[in-house]
Amino acid sequence: MNQLLSMINLENVRVSVGGREVLAGVSLRVEPGQSVAVVGPSGCGKTTLLRCIVGLTPISFGVVHVDELKILPHGITTEADLRAIRRRASLVFQRPALLPFRTAMESILEPAIVIAHIPRGQAIREASEYISLLRIEECVGRFPGEMSGGQQQRCALVRALMAHSRYLLCDEITSNLDEESVMRIIQCLRMVRSRGVALIIASHQRQFLQEVTDRCMLLDGGIISEETFSKLVAGNTTVPDRLPAAS
Amino acid sequence: MTYSWDFSQVIQYFPAILRGFAIAALVTKLSGIFGIVLAVGIVVLLQSPNTLIRGATHAIATFVRAVPLLISLVFVFYFLPVATGLRFSPFWVAVFVLSMNFAAFASDILRGGLRAIPAHHVDISLAIGHSRASLLRHVLIPETFRRSFAAVSNLIINQLKAVSVASVIGLPETLRTADLLIASQSGANPLELYLSVALLYAIVVLFLSIVLRRCEQSQWIALEPVTKHD
Image (cartoon, rainbow over all chains, first blue to last red; front, top):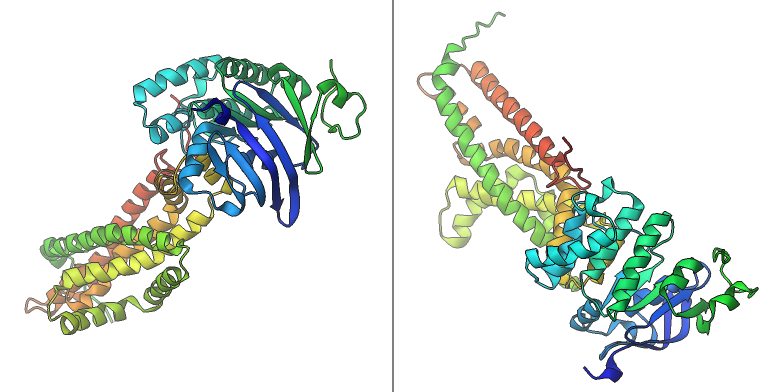
């Protein structure tokens, strides 16, 4: 693929939800191997930004490029293009996203077996690396109702990784998680990043972001701008309340 | 007035009653299978973006639900030969009408089950690259069935009991068999025979209810199953 076409590129993207303009002309470019943090106060549109990259929330203006594929305003992108985009950019949701009637292992293998049609044995071998890294061996045979929030979130992360996407989008995946879960997730994200996967991570947790990202984008009032973590903590009024101070 | 009960006749006629019950069970099974397939089709058509398809499907399902089963059976039994020039046996007319009736009611239950699926279940499935068709097959249909199983179970039990209505078109199911035995020259006593038919239904329905309840709690059907720990 042409190197110039290998990137996520949002050009002047506007998104309205329920009559309110959540994104008011956002431009963002993420190239392979980069890791970008998206911060901002609650309700500023971080989730909307990530959802519109994978076409789950339609945009009203602008264009989203994922490699050579485009998402255009008002949902006119074809279903085939949307599916191709979602195979390249995986979104891990804030809410642990596993179907209640599938065991963790079934959910984890779904992108490989059902979507990519990889043989089950091969898919299990691939998954086992992430499963042991994230220490969820004991819960892969369980249903979500029998797992803690942290275990569910780690399973959801492995599920997203099983799609072998070039871009991994994480929407506040460490919120309300215990320290051990966060540490495991950091290790896992570092590993996938070392393999060339680009990360876009929305979070309120500065320490977590500093561990896994190298660029910081502040989203506020529907506008995105490049910032540094130190500037965000040092008295900027738009710093989100929950962004903890450095320890 | 004193009535002298004589259950010895029941033992004599029970094999015939059981044969009638086997026919009722077969009609229930076939109409249940055809009905559930039709119900899924109706639910899919009700999701169509085309207003005409949606409206027509809704109108037909509502009409079938509104017409009493007895009237549907009699009408189809006498109307089909007029319309097609072919004569259909009471068995297949019963299967057809009961399938339609089951589909009309089951589709409404399934529609409710479908609407109860949280939006984020759809989002997480679309996000990993499911197409609309594979979303339907791997996520929406399995989850809808799990959410609707208890209500559909009741419909299956009701279907077994509803087959007796087809006795009016001559289907030799349990009730019709009992009627014929009572009307025959040997003259079986109606009370004993009807009571035995009622008890047979009660025992089978009780057994079926227990089996369906067990199924409902199994990890293959429960919405939020748990693994079995030793």
